[in-house]
Image 1 (tube, protein in one colour):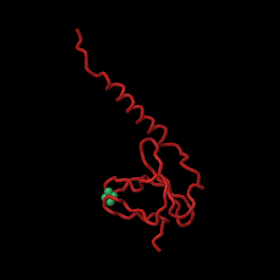
Image 2: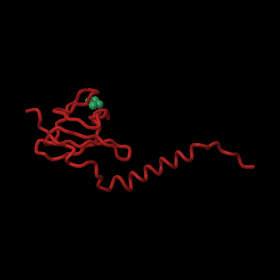
Image 3: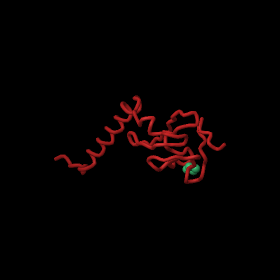
Image 4: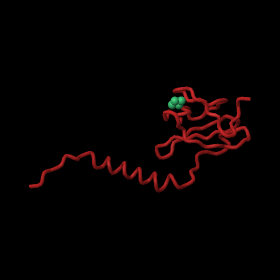
Length: 110
Ligand code: FES
């Protein structure tokens, strides 16, 4: 007689995780994603945060009136840079250790 393994509950979870990872690799990492209308970002420094496939991103309006998109992760210790779904900022700073983020055309310190 074969021993019965005690995997009840783990197989569906593992399959779901595998499916999610496959979806992330084959769909979300290769396609453009509509995150928001530009009109949602009115002024320089306005930003919106959104999640796609388990990752957090944000869009921010720069001083040239362009919209830039970033992964919402501080490069120091992977703390989120923005936490509010929508807001405006003159300076973005990580709240964990205080690193300031000066984006390519986000020269708002002047
Ligand atoms: S985690 Fe962001 S400054 Fe350290």
